[in-house]
Each structure stands twice: as structure tokens, then as C-alpha cells.
Length: 54
Image (cartoon, rainbow, N blue to C red):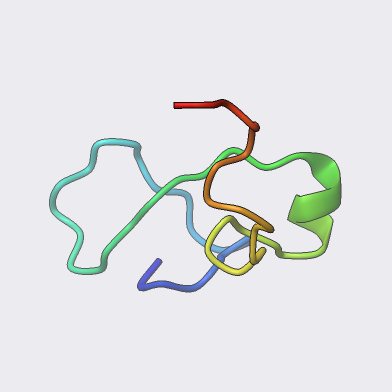
């Protein structure tokens, strides 16, 4: 909510458009959930995850 990971608090409805904050949902594995690591802060090693040739 608002650019920060929230793991507790009031429950929100997916698709609720009446909220004043920017709300985004991301599916995380248990390890990343427990460490509060999202894709935004994980610093991926490469933008292209697989070594495909063009």
C-alpha cells in the first residue's frame, strides 16, 4: 500500500477502486514473505532471467 509492503492490518478487497492509496498485490514464496522481499527490492541479477539468444 503506497509503495510499502503490508503484511497485517485491515483486509482489502481485490479490485476495490474506492481506495485513496496505490494498492498492488504480489505473490511471494514463504521465504520472501517472511523477509519482506518483493520484486521491487530484490535486485535481480539480470533483466533477462534466461539465457535466450535473439
